[in-house]
Image (cartoon, rainbow, N blue to C red; front, side, top):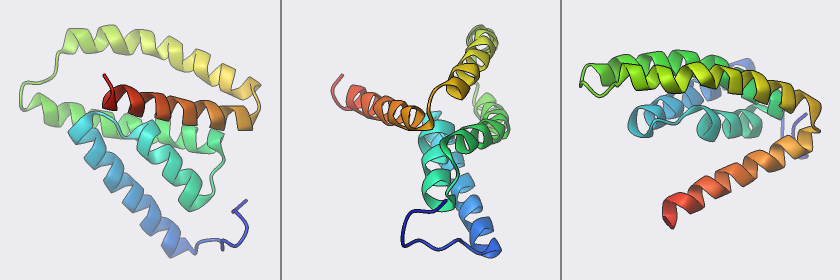
Length: 129
């Protein structure tokens, strides 16, 4: 459902918005190592009226492609530590499964507020180390 006063985007507008989200996510991912949560999720919610759960799930699908491309590009510069990446990535699978199960059990409004708190906390930590 769109916010009051907003109209449903046309098919062409949806495609353009999705492409713009992809470009922004790719730029942020390549430059800063982020792109899914901080970029894709809010834009899917604001521009395409996805629910928080739909935006999160769609973002996770996109991250698979973004991460593979980013890893290959960074690998050409010798920046990838494969063993350390596996030590982070393999246990992260358990975290994804647990987080998904938790997200499905709490109210959607709580998911939104927790995500906002996370983004504010990350921004604050970056500005005031």
